[in-house]
Length: 109
Image 1 (tube, rainbow, N blue to C red):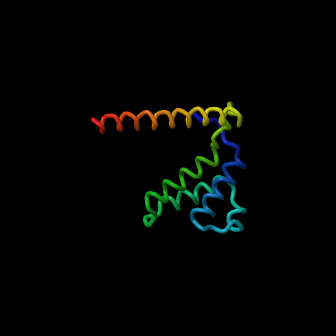
Image 2 (image 1 turned 180 degrees about the horizontal axis):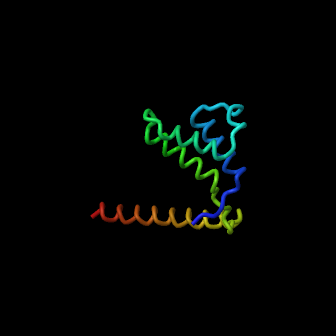
Image 3 (image 1 turned 90 degrees about the horizontal axis):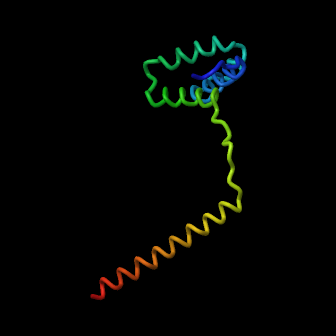
């Protein structure tokens, strides 16, 4: 289960979703606290003329802002990426050449 949310993060994320997805003015939203902003967002999401995809996008954007993905604990260095890419390209070339030879032999019979 996800932990407690900082009130400032919730307020900023909710205001961001309202301003970016529903064209609400940032000046208008800066006077509200997080509870009021969530109530406004809830009312906007319940609107009858709102499409399901728009609702889903707004909910996903709020979730991603409040709970951002952590940075990966492992990073692959550029040298490792270069070595693995070279090995893969070599295997790809050998596979293409080998299969081409097999096709040439079978087609020649």
